[in-house]
Every structure is written in C-alpha cells, then in structure tokens.
Length: 268
Image 1 (cartoon, rainbow, N blue to C red):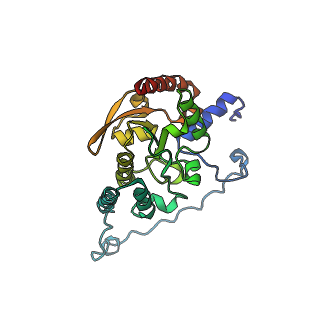
Image 2: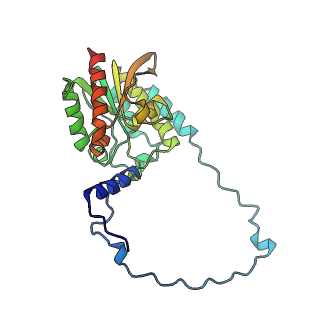
Image 3: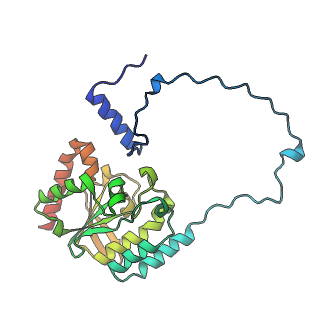
C-alpha cells in the first residue's frame, strides 16, 4: 500500500515535477482521490475480425494523402509585416491584427510591452504564462513584483527599463512553443528590439535561447554577455534566470545576484 506523502519536502518535490511538466492550472475544483475509486469493470472480450480481402484492405487510389502544413508562407508574411513597421506603435497595431499564428486563437490577450520605451535597458520576458495572458503585459503578477525588487537592488526603477515579451501569445496549457510558432513570432520581437534601440538587453529564462538562437539552456547562457545582431546594430545582451524560476528555486538567487552586479558594473 502506497504511503501518503506527508512532509513539506515531498509535496514541494511533487509541485516542482508538475511545474517542469508544464502543469500550471488546476482543471477541477474538487480534488479526486484516485486510490479510492472503484476498480474498473473487465473489458468485454474482443471479437476476432475476419481478414479483409485484398480489394477491401487496399486504400482507394483516388484519395490523396494528407499534405503537410506549409508554414513558410506565414513566416514570410510575418517578416514582411514586421519590417514594414516604422514605429513601436505601428508594430503593436500590426501584431494585434496578425492572424498567421495559431497561438493567437486560444490566447486571451496579445502580450506586447510595458514600461518606458525610451529606456536604455530592455528586458525580454519568456513566453507568457497565465498572469501575462490575463493582463496582456509582460512580467505580470508575482514575477513582476520580484523583478522590480531585483532592479531596485542595483538602483533601477520601472522608469529605467522597457519590458517586452519573446512571444505575443501564450501557448495552450503553458506548453513549449513549436519551432513553427517560434519562427513566425521571431520577426516581431526582433523588430520590436530594433525599434526600441536599447543600449543593453536583458533576456530572461527561455527567451535567452530563443533570441540568441542557441540550443543550450539558460543554465549555461546566464551570466555571460552576448552580442545580439539586430539590424545594423550589435546589442550587448545578458541572459539571467526568470523571476518565476527564482521563486520556485530560491537557491538560484545567489547566481542572479552575481548577474545583477555584473549588469550594474556594465552600466557604470
């Protein structure tokens, strides 16, 4: 008989497992004890199917096979639309009217930007979570509160930064975006950065590998300066842990504090 998990450590490990698996919302309001459910009734015996003749088993020759979905057209449309925008306001309007990405169909809001667009520092959020999806702003909820405290620790305020998001729409259930979805959204965030023209770029969590086009994760990217080529400019870019990750893994705050001091020294 399986023992019930009673310690806070075991419960924390279970919650961490759910978060890593992409579970961020409860489906039912009433908990269900699956150990007390009645045993399922035995399935009826399967009937033995008679073998089909060659004529019956062969697919109709007149019916074509399903063609793969071609996304190159949507990617090219996104590139042309983003390049045609000459201001941040035009880019936001174009993004809100763009229907070439399937993520938009299930998202509550388009997540675009917040803060001071003329700031020297731009911070890019990871793909929207439920808080960002509801508010339409990057770094919403508790992660936004923690970000403000992180900035305040090195003498920065909300007026000193401009916030953007690597994806404008939340993937359903918080799942990782597909390569096709990333390719469609990438021209918009790159153009957003180009129009904002920050002196320093901070990329958090999954946004680091996405924008730097790296296959490695944030654990290896964080704390090291990179040059991000945007238009005719190379922007100094620093990847750091996402505030939401720090809330779930407080031990990583030590590394983030070192990264913030690195940022403060570079700004000075």
